[in-house]
Length: 238
Image 1 (cartoon, rainbow, N blue to C red):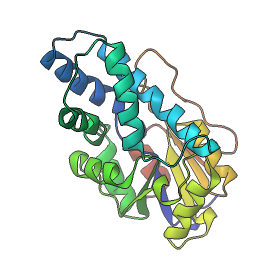
Image 2: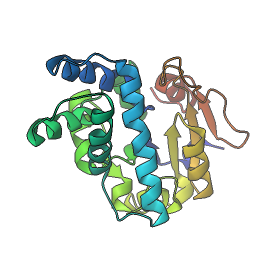
Image 3: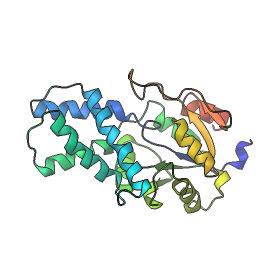
């Protein structure tokens, strides 16, 4: 396809733009040290993240009422702190620790690569994270979004079609004028099913050594890149 047909790039954020696992693990280690707990903090981050997917699936299926990701993370945090043997902790401290997900470091190419892509396209988040979370993260990690958009605005989590379609509608664009950039094939498949274009950008270190990242595109993906600079080159950005 011609890159001139694309007017906006919208980005999955967790894992695609920011390194959630390393960032959460580091903050969890500090939190654990404060409370006298030793653990595998990478595993702690994985265990916390696992509740994110389960919580969203319950919302999309109608099994649970609408909850923003901050709520889903907080509910999961209560479960895993008990599993890891933490003592009782005041709610205000837990609320602050729950915001670890607002303080995630970008991948090394994130800010500079996004700025290159922004020179030619509208760039916006398309994350399941709630607006407040994504706004704080953008400030923390210096992410130069033109718009902070979220599945929260559609009332459905990805990979529900409305999460993608609502984003295009909010940008005033046709579905096929918008391309999702993500490191996860399942997310990109959801975008294609909703009428958007798809670009896989690989993040081989997202899960450490414990899981296999998506490193190969599916046949109908529109672009395949090793990082944001590679994608910018392919799209003709300066």
